[in-house]
Image (cartoon, rainbow, N blue to C red):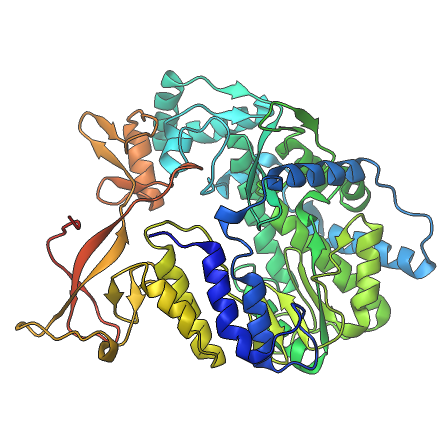
Length: 553
């Protein structure tokens, strides 16, 4: 039986009544438990897909157009002080030295030729225009190639012919599929919360391939500033919790940051070589699902491979420049006590720099989200952490994962939340347990079933000494290489067998036992089924032993 969002909310509200919650706002005088309770009540059905407003996509599209128009009209405001001018000059200098390096008296750009990006290029996990699927093999070796500029394919072809195996794979692909040039991306909507969706643009295949090559180059260069994008979320979370406890740090969040990097603004700030490379790799237009085509005045959108590192670089340059002008000690990011941190549009700065950083961001066309930015006070938010007085009080979000497992997932998440904050939710758990009948060990995945300790299951070991149980597992979706071609899951587009591409996919690490795991296209749901499992120990993590798979009849 699927979860009813309204019923779940009412049960959670009933369980939390004893905490005397009189306001949906987290106030400074609340205890951490009370603040956690308020946060849970605000979050529990905020992103539940079954309760999304019918205007969610329209509101997202309207906001996208407004941000795009703001990018078109951007000019550096004239009402700026000499100090602000100096900071912007420092930002330009930082970006110049980020891109240009001097070695043995020779100065060169980070990437002076787009061809260099091909050694770092890769396919992303999402959709690309023209691609028949989302996996590495399908994108590069079993489908057409799309691009905004023919020179991108010329360079790719030149790169491929110099590598025998890659050349064979490309020749096989080119015989079967026609490449074509496009001048736009495809805009679509993905869930954000119940009131508004989020826009994302699907890029041409080869553009994205180069963009992710540049993204890799920028990531490597960012480490010179002490920013490792793999580790940075943890740094942000730690600083957020510290800031909520000591009020030493402030957190800044921006509205539509991905879409707010205007062409005019970056032309003003970036070295020419860097700016022109971004122009070559971007798409100049996007198309709404209703066919409306819009000229883009932002350098990139969410969905462009360079958007995230470009945000991180630009905002880091702003923080560094403000710190230098204000005389704030700029501790290296790799030390135990960093003085600032940036991860995308999640910015953490010392409290005394908060207003200056916000002012520079505003001058450059960004909008500070006042509801999610916190200068002072016991509450701070960044990178998935809601910190209050030194504790993470992040709520739980019910999302439409799958009707077969949503009740298991939300039960296990709420159980962890309840134990963490010492707040019982008896009515909520009673309601959820009625929706399913699988009880699994505590170390299983959240979607496997209701997690219970052995003492609460009534389980007894079999004669073999093993505990038997049933669990939910996802039915894998794979491309399968066969002697006569490529087997595809039902409902997916057929693939052409490319022997050299098959070998390259194996070398790339995405092909195992002649199978490639593929993501389902948007709108198609994953299939789950019940499976038998057995373990020698219930309460402690151990390797489970599969027995003959059977689906529940």
